[in-house]
Amino acid sequence: MYQVVIVGGGISGLSAAYFLEKHTAAAGLDVSIDLIESRDRLGGVIVSERSEGFLVEGGPDSFLTQKTAAIDLCRELGIGDQLIPSNDQQRKTYILQGGALKELPDGLFFMLPTKVGPILTSDLFSFSGKLRLALSPLFSPPIEKDDVSVAQFVSKRLGREALERLAEPLLSAVYGADVNHLSAHAVLQRIVEMERKYGSLWKAVNAARRAPSRPAGNGQGTASTIFVSLRDGVGQLTNVLQQALSRTQFVTGTEITHVSRGASQWRVHARDGDAEAAAVIIATPAPAASRMLQQSNPDLAEQLNGVTYHSSMTVSLGYEEASFGRTLDGFGFVVPRGEGKRLVACTWVSTKFPFRSQPGRVLLRCFLGGARDSAITSMDDASVLEIVQHELRDIMGIRSQPFFTRIYRWDRAMPQYNVGHPLRVEKIQQLLKTQPGLFLAGNAYKGIGIPDCIDSAAHAAKGVIEHLTSLG
Ligand SMILES: Cc1cc2nc3c(=O)[nH]c(=O)nc-3n(C[C@H](O)[C@H](O)[C@H](O)COP(=O)(O)OP(=O)(O)OC[C@H]3O[C@@H](n4cnc5c(N)ncnc54)[C@H](O)[C@@H]3O)c2cc1C
Image: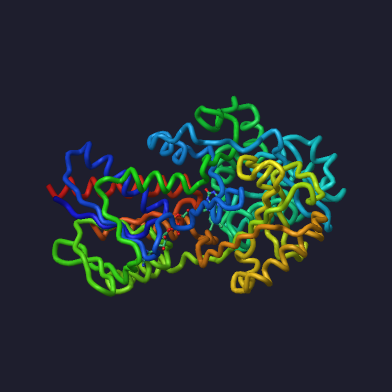
């Protein structure tokens, strides 16, 4: 029997265990799996909580349908019928501009306008900003050979306003990142590839416009939606995953301090003991992986440590609808850095996912922190709530008091894909090849979303199976 150790019990570690169980059985390999997690609970940043008639998401609140790994996994686990699409009849996003909420224009393909009409009639841009956008096909800059920042990439092609009023707030809400450092090749990969393929962004946009539209999801009400969640919240996925693992032993509350290589086996060390394994998957944030490998592989550790992480927090607020005093006709808003607020984004949960609040109640969820504002994540709850309520009053005119609040803090949980990130990931992969039996999974490498993490776990599990098979 082969022993495999997985370090980290977030979605990456749990799905790695799932794929290992599934494929080792099919390959006729006898494997015992230990999954070791430093916290007292599994799931990592995925937490769904029911309280006071609300379903509150502490971390991620949904996943993309376009990348199908999460939906496919839900189906395999028998919870495909629990997937719930966002309420797309009300799919409108607002952007704070000059203190007022302005609607995101229709017809954007990733941030690129595919229709001139909505841009010209939008009140999000100034006259000169609209002109710059409308004329941007004439400003096709030479395609950069090397990676550049999102700020450089977008402003050269679409102008400063499109960067400041569109790209920066939308990407900050997803990555908690600074667009001056964020890698275009990593986070705008599809656009960059299409630009290279067609020779210019605008030829690429035209080609995308002409292409037959591909259904995003694959069935059960998820076909045309961008986001889906689960009836009991995203945490339903990690809970069901955990229950589905019959050959995995879970060890919680144990921090792995380092991972080293013996003559024929790997050794995984904790403060109160160590274990041997034929293969190890490290499915933690990259800095933790770096610390574990510092002694055994300083080069790999250095590359991993180069993926920096920012902290963030979510603040959920529940109100009685009768006293709320505002209609929520959209999914919420994002806030450009230039607006000088501490809120990065606010999801109007009762509209985006109405099943998450009882009728007669309203649920909002604010996102704060990231590269823009690391200080707020160490402020006490009362101060955070005061800031959030003050800004919601300013932006949305909310004067009523929430009867329910919940704050979740995520310490250095959001990886920053800075310029050069794809090259760093290649180096990490090269260095890993010199460490047979060691694999990495997680949000540090090829995508931060839940489907990306599941894909990374599937890849790591495949590597383990190939390695074990090669041992004979
Ligand atoms: C606030 C927030 C909102 C998000 N929203 C979305 C969203 O809506 N949709 C989406 O697709 N994605 C979203 N994401 C991103 C996505 O949720 C994460 O990238 C993903 O869940 C990360 O999973 P993971 O298992 O790789 O890492 P984690 O969830 O961070 O899990 C890693 C685990 O490793 C453990 N660990 C660390 N060090 C050690 C050690 N030394 N020994 C043992 N265990 C260790 C940690 O305790 C942790 O449990 C969001 C992220 C955050 C923070």
